Image 1: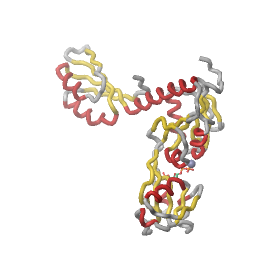
Image 2: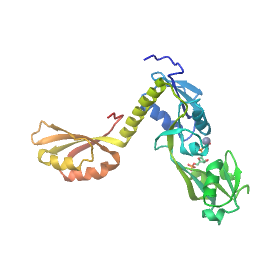
Image 3: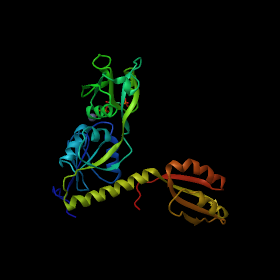
Image 4: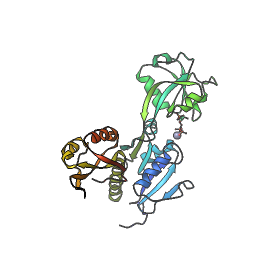
Length: 293
Ligand code: PRP
Ligand code: ZN
């Protein structure tokens, strides 16, 4: 394949320059074999081994850049995708950068349930989602649109409450605010432009998605190895929560075998105890870098 960065084939991908999504997005890109450096200093980074260039942007700007086709793909929080109400295609939910858009009010406040907010002032950087939520409930609020440091507004009597992103809850706590209810659950999404793409770009996107899926599956799976007496193999096979049949190899020691399998990580600890009860020993669990079906 021609590696020159010609615009008809080279994919342009938007990622957050610095913020909650940056490190994990960079890890994911490196994890699927895309090599690049100097992303901290540059706004545009060419990758060394894939026809991809990365554009480092403010997360708020990413949905529009992708909508308009300036970037073909983008990694951005669902909060920004839905707030900007952009016409983009969500290709994948990536289960990192999780947070929620929630309404919070001062801890001694009587504003607790949505209906308490009738006629009250809510400060937010998410006017679209906030307005839509209260409108859907038939509650009219007064919106105070603010681009940053929203959490300080109740103390300044600029607003009665706020609607803002919450991740750990540290920011709310530090400002004497209590989270009351959630408007939107958010995670990182991989989005694609709805503008027409060349055949070359479409093929690259398919390749990119296959690698991401392999990386995601691998992250959720573990390679498990154990030794077991030959007569416990059937019991152990039945216990292993694997789609595929395990690999079974004889050991030099007679009457014993080694069993290898891939299992979902979230089931490892439950299964491990049952395997021990069934006679398995020397159980080893290993991470997997990538898995391609
Ligand atoms: C959000 C939000 C809070 C903080 C909450 O900002 O505005 O300041 O995160 O996180 P916590 O619950 O873990 O304390 P974000 O990082 O999205 O920055 P941005 O709005 O400038 O993109
Ligand atoms: Zn932002």
